Every structure is written in C-alpha cells, then in structure tokens.
Length: 343
Image 1 (cartoon, helix red, strand yellow):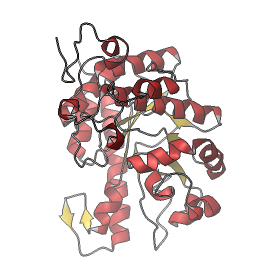
Image 2 (tube, helix red, strand yellow):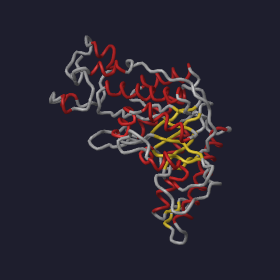
Image 3 (cartoon, helix red, strand yellow):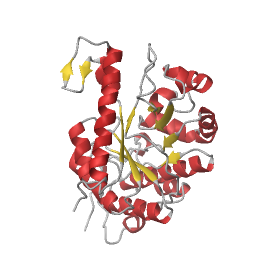
Image 4 (spheres, one colour):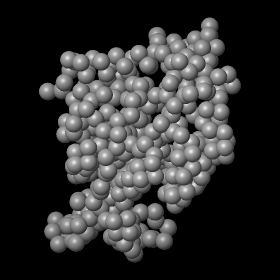
C-alpha cells in the first residue's frame, strides 16, 4: 500500500516509527522546495533529526494539582476605561497574544512592570489564568526564549497557566504533529519545574495521540487539563470539524478519571457548551472565552440575545458576566449531580 507521499507503507521505516499513517497533509502536491517549506517530513533533510532533538515522539506529562476555578473565566483582551466589578469576576483569562510581544520572546513591559491588574485596569485581588492560543509566530518566539519567560511569569503571580498549544493542523505532515505535541508537553513539564501552576493542553490529531495523553494522565495523576476547540490562523490550512473535535473530546473524557476538571477554550456558543457537557461523562467543565467582553462592545446583551441601547457597554459587560457565570455553573450542577452521565 502506498501513502499520499508515494512511499510503500508496508516497508517504510518512517511509517513504523514516526508516521502512524497519512494525515491530510499536502505532501502529494509537494514541489520539493524544502528551503521554503515550513513542514517537517521524511523528504526534508534532517526532518527526523528535528523530532529526535526534542526526545522523539513519545510524550511524558507530569502530575499537577487541582486549582479551584469558577465555571466561567472571561478572557479580557483589552484594558478597561472604567474598572469593572471584581465580585462577579474573581478570575479572568489572560490572552498571551496581548501579554507577550508579537514575536513571543518576552512579556510586554506594561504587564511585566505593572502586573496584569494595572495593565487591564481591573479590581485588586483578581486572579488570572493565562492561555496561549495564539498565532504560530508568537509560539515560536516563546519556545526559543522560554527559560527566561518562565522566570518572568513567576514574577507575575498568575494563578494557573495553560501550556502553549503548538499547532497540529490536519494538512501538515505527521512529523509536524508529533513534534508540536511533544513541545507542548515539554513546556508544560518545564513550567511545573519552574514552580508555575501549569495545566497541560491536550493537543492531538488521532486517537493514538489521545491514547498517549490518557496513559500519561492516568499514570501521573494529572488533576486538571485543557482542551481546545479552536484553530488560530487558519488561512490556507484546514481545520477539524466540530464533530471530529467532539468525538475526540468524548473519547478522552470516557477514559480518564471523572474527577479531573477540564478547561475548554474556543467555544462561544452556549448550545455547543451544552453538547460538550452531554459527552463529558460528568467531568466539571470550565469555560474560557471572550464572549462577555466582545458582545458588550457590540452592545449585545446575551440574556434575551438583544442589542441594547439602554445600558452602557460596561453595564452590558457586567450583565453578560453574571449571565454566563450562572449558565455554566448550572450546567456543571446538572451534569455532575445526577444529571446525564453519558451511557
């Protein structure tokens, strides 16, 4: 049997040790211009060496601790003109794309020198979760300078950090998947070693990837994980469809301890959050998104789904926060306390 790459899968050494079968990569359309190609593949000189330079395709995920987080964590992408209420927003999401320089090599001075509370003009005592669902350019810069960034992140006193999600695109060669999944685990483990409260991002392409994660989560008693339903910078790249993500998520939830809490990123639709709960096998779900902020700037009040001209944008933001706080917590109560348990 020949793969899209033209190699004989039955005798190919890359298939046995690295490839694990065809992804939807575009190697069949390759013009062999390796100098200008971003991808790691068997055709590229030193492609395998890149993967081996990070320890090969096998992953290791150290155990972390459970951190109390509310069911709804609003991501705040921009500074507030008027300080919002802290009582309804005890924990916020920090977007690494805003907090770091564009090339990802360092934290922006206004965050590093002033702290995120002053940088965003939010209430004193507000805690934060940092997420790295950002463009590849930022991730690569962070990777190159990560040891220095760990030291600076330690100064920031952030409650929890979701490990970077190095891109696993469907149309990339399998070597890219393995390389980037491995880097995700490396950064997660290094963050723990640096004294940061890290949460691993479960990045994956195939069930084999999820099986590796399940093995490590069980073996090392990981208490909290993150799962992304979003794709960043999808120009000229294919994205997984919703059902594919949901099927993978269900498979993961079914095969790990139900006490593990899962942070969900990339979902803005309440209907889809309900679908996630329906396949989560009772896991507590924590939702991070920008919906409350973004919709308030459009004058959109989520309760009733109406554009509102009576309230200020800040008033709408507060009302949206309270709406999502209750909605997501009620979903957890329903599914964790005798609700649907996924047959």
